[in-house]
Amino acid sequence: MMVEHERFEDFLESIPDGLPEYLADLEIQSIKDNVPIIRKGSQHLIRFMLELKKPLNILEVGTATGFSSLFMLEFLDKKAKITTIEKMEERALKAEENFKKIDKNRQITLIKGDAIEVLDELVSKGNTYDFIFMDAAKGQYINFFNNIKKLLLPNGIFITDNMLQEGRLLDSRYTVVRRDRTIHARMREYVKLLLSDKDLKTMLLEAGDGMAVSVKK
Image (cartoon, rainbow, N blue to C red; front, side, top):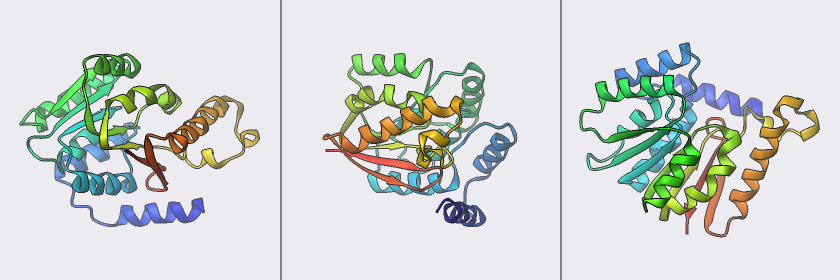
């Protein structure tokens, strides 16, 4: 199954995606610098969901150097706003630089800091979002979850990236190397939490490195 999935991802990679030159260049540079960015399958799904939902207030957990924020911006109304959170200082500085060059309408707001603390603050301020994209430290997903739910509006869409962990999520705990067992256990717990939550309707998809698409009831 994973072999077929990889073949499908390779097929998507081979299809011209029409990205503007600045995004294509940023994608190439990110890959060279070993900065994780959303895969082609993830890009296709996010674009589809954005064009379907047409959200006006977007939250992203995990900015990296800004590729995914700028990618989403391509498919949003000029009135839409993106708030994005990044903990790593070096990546946040690079994202700031990219946003200044490209985000001429100042639709993107970058918040530097630990996502757990930032999410707490956003909740305390009464912020809400109709579209949330999470692509951060996978071992922390389960710790972000309660606040994500509070921030998501009814009928809002919540997308979690990197669910499959390069296929390791599907492996038995006993075949996972010791150093990866904690994150493996946390991700499995997170999947169970998503699928059993009564306030959300969730589908798990193989796009990219696996994605969960949740809609708040």
